[in-house]
Length: 285
Image (cartoon, rainbow, N blue to C red; front, side, top):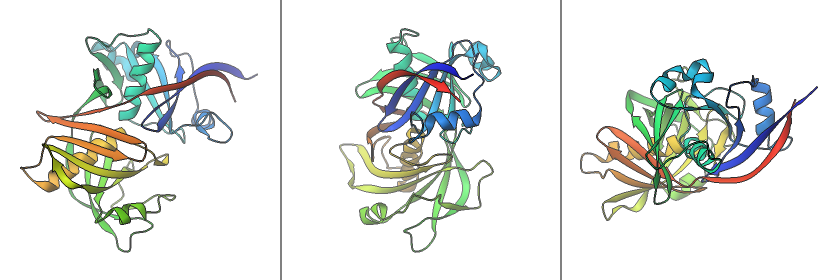
């Protein structure tokens, strides 16, 4: 007999999620069930699933609970695979907790993830998440993608989950990418990586704020309208390439909208909107 569970559909700049409340960790969702929920033709549809569970209720959340984070964001990709973090997902998760009365954000909201505890606050354009420290990995990664005549070097950046950022020469090159299939990476990271393709704004810096455009292929999902941690990685990569005079504040345009990135004392912060679209119930199969 199938089990019926409540859900909410939400998105952050078009990066959309199926939100499943499970405060006491009673649900044991298989990768196949998650993939069915995220299926855009036969399910609700989404780039991933956010399970809302108390940190104390699951083994992965014990450290988060000890750090004062009541809630843990159990994030799954659209194919059902487990992922460390999702920048847009944290903002949508925060919106859900606040609007359902499960948490208050006025003094900052702590959310547990597999990449550590993240702090959420309100911002002028929605919510801001402190993604924490980042790491630029040594060496280049060679990236092959449909629409690129020759492989391009990319820089590997870890912002709690892995990314490879590739600079393109023009808007036309960005628009001409074929991201229906996964870009090939050499060497291939052990756990895979999200791949971001970026072009600079014209001008690159205006009023002390940098500007770039980006498209992304997310591991376990495909091309998405937005990727929050990918936006942060892209801004960090362009700042790295631009040198010491580059600004610490950036706007990043993605197909789903615009997000803000700030670098402060070795940490990177991401801000942008988060929207809850509708609620319902669904039968698990």
